[in-house]
Image (cartoon, rainbow, N blue to C red):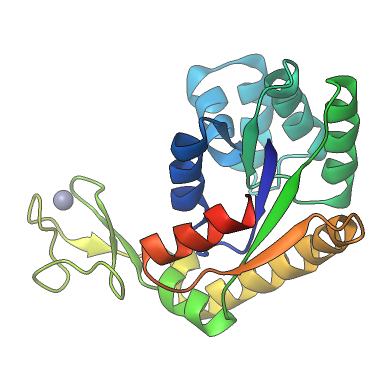
Length: 210
Ligand SMILES: [Zn+2]
C-alpha cells in the first residue's frame, strides 16, 4: 500500500499516520521529520535545506523530491505525511513510483473547519525551560502558564497567534487545493472528518484505506 495523507496543519495527520504505520506495518515518511534529521545530521542535503530554512524560504521541490526518492526505491509500503504539497511534487512522486514499479493507492484528506484549526494551532505553547509542548485549548497545563514537568514558564510563538495562523491556513489552502484536485481526477481521494476523539478519527482513517 502507498498511502498519502493530506490535510491542513493542525489536522492531526502526524499522530494518525504514526498509528496507521504501526497498525498496517507500513513505513511512515514525514518530510518534516526527514528534513530535520538531515539538517541535524549535517548531511549535504541537510546543509542545502538549511540554507533555505534559515532564510525563511520553503525548501524547493527538487530537494524534497531527492530526499524522498531514496526512500521509495524498494517499492515497499509507505504512508506519506506532508508530501506532496505541490503539483510538481505530485508529478515527481508519480514518476518515482512508476520507476519503482508501483503507484499511489489511496489519498486520504483530513477535513477540519478553519476556525477549529485556528483554535487548535493558536493554543500551542512550549515550556521555556524544558521545551515540553502544550496546547492551551486541548492539552493545558494544570496551573495556567506553568509547565507541569519543570515549573517553567510557557511561551507562545508569534506565528501561533490567531491572525498568523489564519494566514498560514490560507497559504496552505492555496498551495494544496490543486494537489487535491490532481488526485481527485484519479478517483483515489477519500475525505474523512478529522474532528473527534483520536480513536474515532483513527477508525475513519482505517476504514478509508481498507
Ligand atoms: Zn518545563
